[in-house]
Image 1 (cartoon, rainbow, N blue to C red):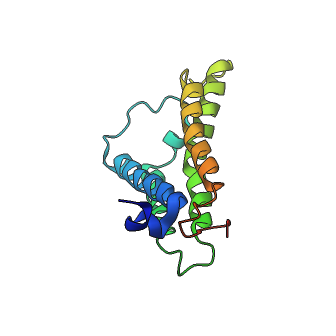
Image 2: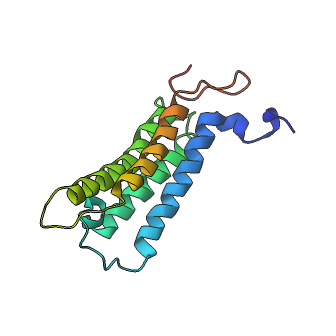
Length: 150
């Protein structure tokens, strides 16, 4: 079974990456809403200080946009570029939150920081980095071009 006989033919490789990340973001946003209330609010993490509904909405809305922009390539002039730009935001904001929490941990401040914040920031930055790399991929010649590589 070749590339021509799969759904990948319509959305392309870049679109497939966006759909996978988008579905993961929707799942993560759903988890934020359904998880038990975090009782450890003492750490200086901006994303934990943000109301759960707002955090969940950001992840779910961005995930839905990232999932549907590759599917809407025939109806929108921006194509999957919009999905990639939106998809960078939640992981980078979370990485920044963890990085700031780690910096607060290092500094002699009255609020506790996050000793593992540097590692968590690295992981979230890696997720965003994968999106940056994939957004620059040209599509395979046998696949339709979606985005800026036309």
